[in-house]
Length: 364
Image (tube, rainbow, N blue to C red; front, side):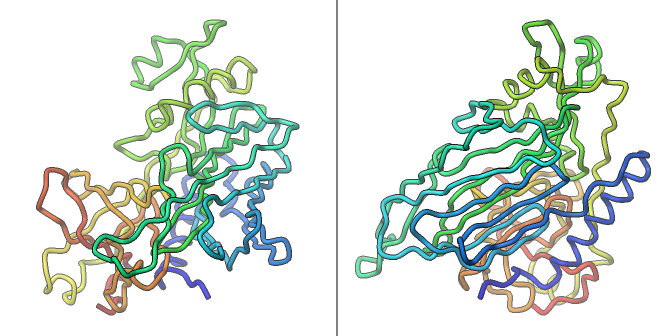
């Protein structure tokens, strides 16, 4: 049975929901849906995603079974029960439009419209390797090849609001996992070039000389170091925004409303049982990507550090989650406890603990 990575994740998710709703009320907008609706169909071995009345997206695996799926905010993952040593695992993607009017598919950074057409399957090659120093150990699978192990699907409405979902196949602790992540939610906005430059927003120019930007719709996508969609996705982003603006799927800048980055903070100081062991500090997660299993977080002084799934510890036992076969994730805009690794040129977290909202509720 697959369980949540840490006990306080449900509390953190609710806190993020409350922050999102509060931001929406301040802006005078209709509050966004609290979360995606996920389900696992054990008869057909598929995972189904429904959100914001945009669309339903289902993911299934050809020839193999899926285990119980786990949802954490805008992230979903489920184990794949593969037999033997397959050289490829193929994911089948199907969608049903609800409120969205257009759907795009992107791999290798090239978005193409698939409205009214079947999405292409994702075939992921598997490389079986003997672990380093493990001559007599069983071979383990590897799937990570940039742009080969994942695809992005974008659902867009007539006013240019869109949600980008990333689907992939990853390996963790010698097993296969299907991952689905709401990677970004933005709106295409037209303006003039001078205003875009003055605002400091990256922009694209269409053939009809429209100037378009992408404005984030959710607080967690207003990450301070990388708040602009066109910077986060320099390959597929410009072409997607250009296609939307040319199709007049956009709004004027006067209608643009950008939410504020509103981190969920740990209450009080870190507990003595952490501080007494080594130099632990608080850090706010900027983003975390399921495909690569890593992201960044910011310290109180603004220093940006790298975070990786292998460094996430169980909040009760202190053991690395991946040692137990569990799937470690971090939620953007939440505060975590980190112990820094001061070796090397790039600051990184040597250990990470997802803290309860009340920091005293920790077992290690």
